[in-house]
Image 1 (cartoon, chains in turn blue, green):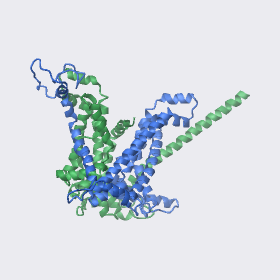
Image 2: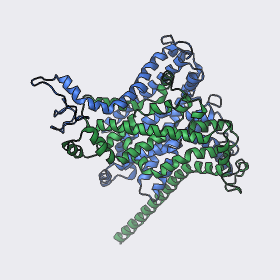
Image 3: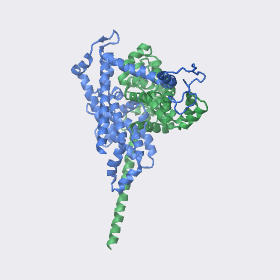
Image 4: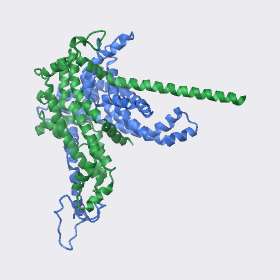
Length: 328
Length: 297
């Protein structure tokens, strides 16, 4: 029944709240609907509101993920029919694939370079933005320009900036008397260089999140700390950091997840080279999936990446919860 | 005497404190503006190279404002239509795809956001949090099955795969709009209900007109994500006639890899529209990030 009080719309006890008001359910006097039917008929309009999104989740997310697991258990070149091979893809990845381990090592190194750097940079920027400096609006706009630019354009611009002979970076280095470096052609510097580009691009985004958190710290806490004789260093460690810890966790978790998926920079700036210095996980995955059309093998790779990201997110959340529990 | 001395030393320490504060403030200024400069200089260098005649892009020491600066590189990029680099076409494609995805997102996310914020139905919160959890899934986890699915649907290498999958809402947009809708006073809904409006009418007569700013945030973010997306077009549309700007730009670099002045002109064309949108809608960016950054709390 449509017009009943509680259920879908509790605040409208006597109002018709169906989508199509002329459609009133008539029923014989004395006939009662059962609970489930009543709930369903009252709520189906609500489900209509979320139906498109749920359809999207089912078709473009849930089904692909389940299907992907099945595909990861097959050998499939996308031409002939898939052949079920059990866990063979996973076994081969872990035991017989040198490049898998190379790409894994490169990616973990990238994560370890990128995440602390972006966190520190964003935190310093956020703290600076929180000071009432004149012209800070300009700074906020400036650090946001790389955020809104596509990684493709950013990567291309940085290839030009980092090029050996006429790149701006080396021009500046030479001007102060240092030798130029072939940043992207040197095994040692290529990965730090693409990590630096990643940091450069996303520090503004993370700084804004931390800045929003900083602004919500009550001034009262700082005043209380001052009365207790805390200097600014104490205030930072004992008030600011604990108060914005949730935002720091958020930034860290999203940065780790994002860093594990690094692809565009390696694809555009270095092509995985020189040697295998920037042969990141998704670059290898991309080659397996869409270069060689190894659907099963690539699906297994994407499942492994998914589990790694999931596990690292869980571990970080757990650790910070423990740290928070220990602090208070 | 002792009092005077202590007063003098107190003044001195106060003076030192003030000096220290001014110094740290100056250092902060320098640091912050260095960072701002670092963020902008690459783009300024890009612009400089794009406007310089090609022979000046590879000289040492560099000439920042050589004679003959102008639009010649842009003209050359736009007239190079032979070798798979038709930037006007990429522009049109990108705008076309963005339009449909933005439209779809606005409709579906606002409907769902409204339901999660205001309506009550069994399992609402459980569904909502599950839906939020899907934000953790990256495109890399689903790209292989989606590649297969797009083949099955017959959408691979057509404009459909660039628009339809993006039109069915997103956890991000739904979450953001839900957060915003929850800040609207409930009394408005109640008053409208008493006047005999149904939920759909409330949604588009009352809630939507009040939510222009939040809808703008979503529109801008969606536009940005479609405009800047690279992996999806790279995998799903091999046909150059369907390429987006990012895909075309990447190909362009491969073809003209020594002509940096042309590459920078092409990059400039790809990023300037986004810069314009950004400067016009700057407020919305910061608002939107603050709104979704609340997820961390």
